[in-house]
Image (cartoon, rainbow, N blue to C red; front, side):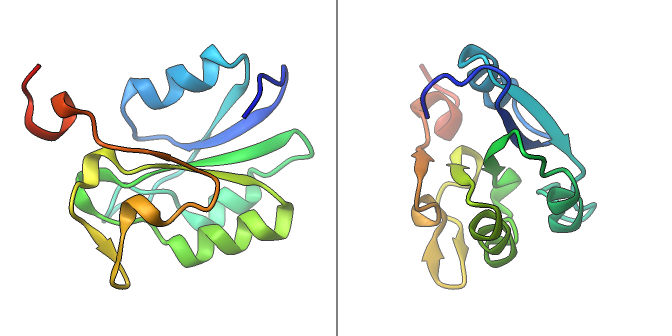
Length: 121
């Protein structure tokens, strides 16, 4: 995604600081979306409510190995022509409907960094 000032990226309200920092680095505006209380992932209903004409992307963060509701998120992304950024760093080895989480997003993926995956530098 090229830097687009004033562009909005929807991001879960519970996430690692780096998820938001990369949005700010690109001069976009993070818009925090409520989370599901059992998985800490994006709440699809609030996600759709937060879409505006300035929204350009959704960043999905699969937290603690719990997959987000990918079918619903991808439906919303397609409906509003949004890019999807898949941050599955915290879900190494997890699956959603028999698919590895690292291959869910058609737009962009963030893979596990060695430090996030095992705590070592």
